Image 1 (cartoon, rainbow, N blue to C red):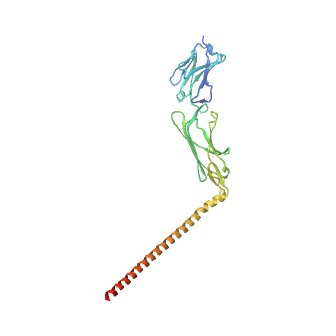
Image 2: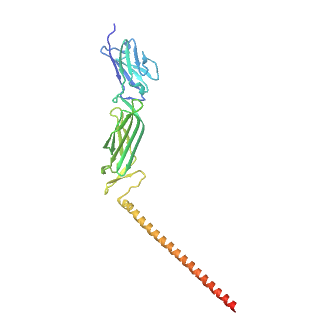
Image 3: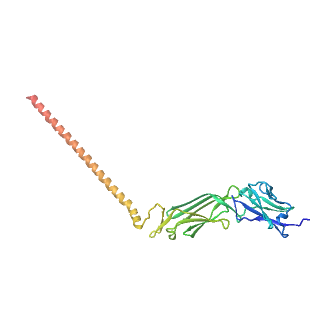
Length: 292
């Protein structure tokens, strides 16, 4: 005579991380049935809807394995290298003629797809800091915020869309106007996944030095020299001095060239006059000789 067994299964390895093994555990309760007392222990279902493990024997050792503890009231299915095809399908655990069937549904409180294809950029134009973060594949959608020196500055709202099944591609794009309190601090983008994974932290390569008398931040990288107020003042005056000096130099060069041209012209005229006078004198002598 079979006794009704109250049984169910649940994920016992939380969070379930894509690319790693997860464990589904079948519980036999109420009558304290031990797995060894089951005439048949079996796991079935999955993407191919077939038998997976039968009394400890796996249909695919590279994918499925049973984990049993005869001193307890449960037995487990190990799914190796969790993929998207393993999700949102039914799994059944059986003890004799009794079984429990549930859908292994994607849930952001249980599952985590580690982010891949990450691209992050910090850029500054005047005092406006732009932050861009692209993630090609991730689950769940992280919550990202901008920090300066561990101080929360801005919560960034993502633009998301589904891609390649159950995971997400996410883009964050935000702008932040720097203030005096952000001076000489390195920006940091922090993305959290609640309790399913550790936060991701992306640090900018630049710090920001502010000119107090103008309250305008200047972008400095590791190879950029620091500017003080005196250098900035000299920098702002330099173009006017340069233009004035260039103008004076061009004027002097023009005058010099003009003087040379006039002098050359006068020299040519004087030489021409001398030749004409000499020619007239020679003509006069020839006439005098002819008359004599």
